[in-house]
Image (cartoon, rainbow, N blue to C red; front, side, top):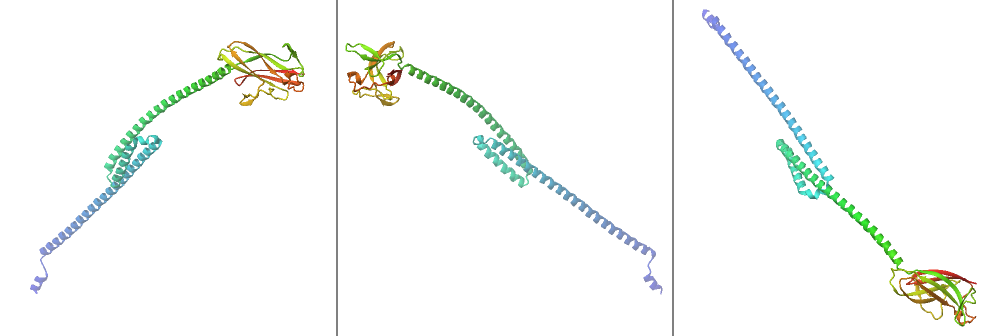
Length: 321
């Protein structure tokens, strides 16, 4: 009985000791769990911070990449606009354009690869090259403007010279016309009469066509220092009432009047001396043989024209009853 009690019942000291060990174990477990939780919380917050940082970094990089891309697009647009505005200078800067295009392609590759720092540097260099490109074009534009102004001035001077030459040519033409007009003989008709010649050779003025044998025209070749002195052929045309040029049957020669061939009534060779020179010419009627059956001088009005070298130099008229 006493021995069973010894087996089943421990001493109070031992029970307290076991209880103390259990308590310590529980505390250790709790501490371990707390430590594990702290570690897990630390890891959670660390990962969360890393995720936030990574997200922010990704967002920043995306924004930077987009900003660089927009800046590049703006720069290229400005370049293209500038090129279009200066199309006439495009050929003079073709090498520079090719270099700029190559830089643009390189920057786009850097942006796609995420090398934003290098992309920024390359973009800065591209902007600098574009500014130099613009400066070259501005210089060329200025030179072209100066050249155009010089050409405009030259064209103005040429136009003025052309106008002067045109005016001078017109003056020369007018002078030539005046000289040409001045080089034509002029005749001042002083008398036109119908005459009858008596047997003794005396001329009698008559007014009737039936009695007339000749028409006498007296005129003065006016002094002209421009005309070359020498032999001049003077032609007389007597145009009858039927508008026909009176001409003897023996006269088969013709002259040109206004480019058209025409008969003439009489001609005279004169030695012109550049001074006033009096001259009388006659048209002899077919009635001069006193045959009353043939008479080309009839009643009516007659026009008298005097020509030299194809030019009309004098005119008059007469009426026969």
